[in-house]
Length: 490
Picture 1 (cartoon, rainbow, N blue to C red):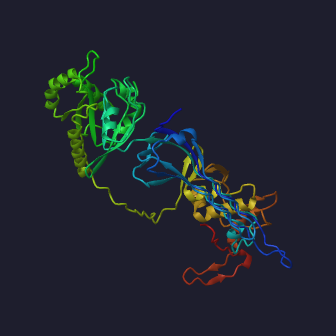
Picture 2 (picture 1 turned 135 degrees about the vertical axis):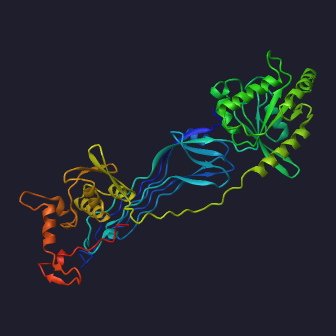
C-alpha cells in the first residue's frame, strides 16, 4: 500500500448553477398577479489551500474525482435557490498546480495560500427578475450555467533549506536521523529510502529544514533508478550536501568519482548550478574510510568545496557540520529577494471595446465573448420566447451590427459557444406573443418576415427636424410601437 504520493492527476468539477423558476403569482380574486419565479443558486467552487498538517497527496491518489455541490433551482413566491457549498481541498506546502500539458497554474508555498481552481456556474434568473415594461410576464427563465470542468496535475516539491544527495547507502538517512527528530527507514542495503524524508534542525536560536531523497545513480536524470522521481524535491533547497560513503568496497568508486557522478546527474536535471555545495565524508569511524578521507580531502577542497568528516555512529564531526549548515542557510536567506507586495492591477476595458469579437472561420461567423457565450449557455432553446429574448440581448449588445460589418448575410451560419444558428436579422423587431412564444420565430406563408416587419415599423415612425427634433410628419405612431430598452442585461 502506498504511503507517500507526490504527483497526482485531479479531475475537478465545480457545481452547476441552479435553473431559474417560471411562476405566476395566483391567489383568490387575483388570478394573474404577475411573475414571481425565483433565481437559481450559484454552484460551488473548488479551491486548493496549503495546510501545514498535510505532507502528502495520498488522499487524492485514492479519490482523484472531485465535485462541488450544485446550486438549487429557484421556486415560486420569489424564493431563490440555495447556493452550492464551496469545496476546499487541503494540499501540502510546496504543491505545484499544472495543466495536463505541463503549464504551471500556481505554486502554492506558505501556510494558508489559497487558489480558486474551478469556479462554480452562475444561477439562472427566474421570470420575476426578467420582467420589464415590454415583457411584463415572461414565460421563460434562464438556465443555470455549468461549472468549470478541468483536469489538473498536482506535484509536490518539498520546501527545505538543505538537501542531501548521494549514492544509495551513503548514509543520508542516518545523517538526517541524528541531526533532527526524523525517523527514516535505515538498513544495510541499497534503496532503503523509497520516499523523501524531511527533518527540522534546531541550533541555538536558528531553525532550518533538511530533506533526504532516495539515492542517485548514474542515469538517474534520464529515469534510471528512483532518483528522477524525487529530484524535484531538492529544487527549492538553498544548500546541497554531498553525502559520500568513504567506506564503500565497490570497485571503481571513490569520493571524487562519486561527487563527479552526482554532479553530472544534477547538471542533467538542470536548475541547480547556483546552489552552494558542501561535502560530507561519512563513516570515518571505519579505519580504511578515515584514511581514504584524509587522502581525498585536499583534492575536494581544491575544487572550492568545504569538506566535513563525520560519523553518524559515533557523532563525530556533526557539531561542526551543523554550524556550517546554519551559516550557509542564513546567508541564503539574506540573499533571497524580498517578496513583492501584493498589488491589485485594474485594467479597465478600452472605450471602443464591445466585449466580443466576430471572425469568419471554416464557413461560419464565430462570435466570442464572455457575455454572449454566457447568454447562450443560459438560454432554454425549447422555449421560443427565451430564444427571442436572446436575440434581443445580442442585438442590443451590437452582435447583429458586427455580423453585418463582417459580411454576414441572412441564412449564414453563426457560432456562439457550443451553439450554431442560421442568422436572420431581427434588429428592433420585438414582437411579444402568448407566453412562451415569440412572433419572430413563426413565419407561416403569407406572413411578413422579420425584416419586412422591421421596415414597416421604421416607415411608421414620425419625421423629425434634425436640428430641433420637432415632429414634421406625425405618421401613424401608436403607443404599441414604442420600443423601450430592457434593464435586465446584467
